[in-house]
Structures are given as structure tokens and as C-alpha cells.
Amino acid sequence: MVTRRATDKLREGHLWVYRSDIVELVPALDGAAIDGGSIITVVDQRGIPLGSATYSDTSEITLRIVSPEVGLTRAVYLEDVKERLGVALALRREVSPECFAGSGTTGLRLCFSEGDGLPGIVADKYGSLVVVQLLTQSTAQDDVRAAVVEALRASFSDESLVIVERPDPKVRELEKLGLPPAEALYRADPGSAGFASVFELNGLKFNFDAGSGQKTGAFLDQRLNYAAAARYARGEALDVCTYQGGFALHMAQVCKSVTGVDASRGALEVAERNRALNPGLVAEVDWIEADAFELLREMEASGSEYDTIVLDPPAFAKSRRAAEGALRGYKELNLRALKMVRDGGTLITCSCSHHVPLVDFMGVVRSAAIDAGRRVQVLETRGAAPDHPSVVTLPETDYLKCVVLRVG
Image (cartoon, rainbow, N blue to C red; front, side, top):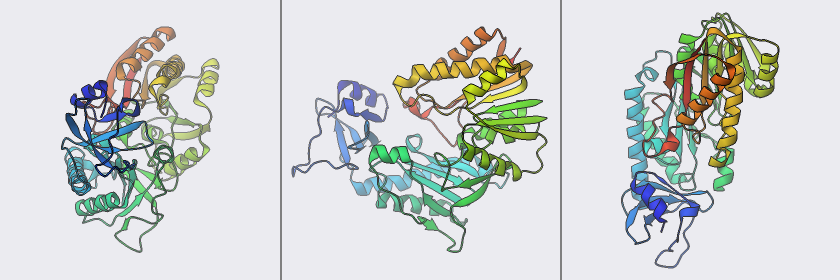
């Protein structure tokens, strides 16, 4: 049973119920407690059913709606997983055909959790390697693993895939999940390589190793924004929070020089290996290991200038309470960058914090422009690539903002 607040949100199409909105957990008829990972029926305070949801006994997101049906059984849920994953894979072939046509892109997101009606299931493809994340107590189970592998094999029957599961350490801790299988869930060719791959984005090659990196290893959601950056970039470029060089290497196709900045030495080592995979790049590329805030302060104080600057920081706001501090962080980065962009230059500024909506992010950019005394034009407001679909009734799925600005 859930509160009136949660009831109203669910009836408006939201899919989550937080622990604070749980009124009562009613045990089964035999009196057995509800185990984490169970599928339960959700009702309002009058007992009116609202659908079926997966249940977590540890996460703040306690219930995730998976069906409008009442009394959903595990068997029906597993069939729904296979069917919805098949639909998700078909959608990718429709909205991102270039990723299947051998035309220079072999990395994409195949399944985006709630975005595809599959809460707690994420799958990314890096060339011949598919990385699966099962992020809830209900999905991190052998029957779901089998259902996911079956659907993937059916959709990619003509490819020799290696399918592996990779846990998110923070989610594992929150959901109290065990380790996934150490071996590949599925290996079409028993003699194929391990969990490393080279994949392509927009004609550029990138390394991927399922045993390292953050999240599932590369920011596939920025794929089309990388390409947009290459269209706008020129001259001397600076890529702040470059991670493994996504924006930097795309801009290096057209710029005179590109400097990529990141606080992670490991990420920059991968970025350099990625640069070596693409020997035809025009620009001279350098990497700097540094804290973005400290380095931009030093650069701005020393009078450094660039024709193109990209800001792609990690999510500053991991919770609603952190949103105010995140806005201050975005303000400082954008203010420093705006002071360093040459007249007529371009600033591409991003946020992946879903707790910071676009209107608030643009407010920060506007405030930074005023303080910097610069005339700033908005050329494009972009989001995630279409293989990361959002749900209009679940704002949390619409998280990525990428704004292209001309600075006067």
C-alpha cells in the first residue's frame, strides 16, 4: 500500500515508489515475509490496484512498476522481459540504422532500463561485445540472465557475440547484490577473445575493456553530440573532463590542436590508446591530468584562450539535496570557460545530472554569461542519442543536456 502522493504520481505515469511513500507491506496469504526481488501488487490506501512492481528491501527506490496488470507472476514477467527486450532491439535498428549498417558506428545502447520498459536492465554493445547490467534485486537473478541472453541471441543470430555481465559497484552495494558470474553469459565462438573490444563511433575507433572503466565503459549517450562537436570545432580546442577522449578525438579531426583534461590517469591512458587507434587525426593532441576546477582557474588567471571549449563533467547532483551545490559547480566551470573562449568561438557545455533540469542548467549558463560579460548565442540544445530513449512521464530518464553556444 502506498501514499496518496505516490498514487497520484503512478496514475500520472511515473514508475517509481520511494521507501518514504510505502504505507504498508502486506505479507502473502501464508504469512511469509516479502523477499527482496519479489514481484508484488501495488495498491492505494483504498485498496485499489495500481499495477505490479519489483520490490527491493534495501533501495530507496523500493518499487519499480513493471506492468499495469495485477498479480503478475514471475513466469509472465520473464516472458515480458524477452518481449520488451526484443522490441527495444527492433527500435534500435529503426532509430539508429547506421549502427547496424557497417558505416562507422558499432557502439550503441541496446536496452535502457525504464526507457524501454525494463527497469533494472541495461545492455550496451561494443563491437562484438555486449555488456549487460542487472541493477535490481529482481533482475540480478539467473532466470532474468537467461531471458536477456535468449533475446539478444535471437536478435543478433548473424553475429558472433560475447555477452558479459558487469555490475555497478555502487548499485551492488545499495541493492545488496552478489557478484555476477565470472565467465561470459554467452560466447558464440568458444575460441573468441576475452572481455575487451575495439568499437567505432562516427568512424573513429575506441578501446573498450569490460574489466575497467566506469559505468559500462564509454559514454554512448554522447555519440551524436561528439559528431556535432566535430562540426562546430575549430582552431585550438580544450576538452574538460575528457574521460577516454570522446569529444577530444572527434574535435581532433578538424582542429589545429586539442587538449584533453581529466582527473583520472587511468582514463587518460585509455584516451591515449584511443588516439593511437586513429592515426589520421589532424590535430596535435595533448592530455593533462588535473582537477578541472583548479586547472581552469589557473588557465583563466594566466590568460589562456581557446577557439573551442567542451565541458562534460560527471554528474554533480546524485540526489535532489545535491542539486544546489551542483548548480554552483556548473556555474564556476561555465564562467571560467566563457572567459577563455575567443570572440566567435564555441562553448559546448553538458550536464548529465537528472536532478538538474534543462531550465535550471540554462539559468546557470545565463548567469555565467552575464558575469563574464559575454554575448552568448544558443546554436543547439541537444540530448542523448536515440538509443537512450526517455519516458515523458519519468523525468529521471531525460538526464543529458548538451548545449552548443557561440560566444561573442
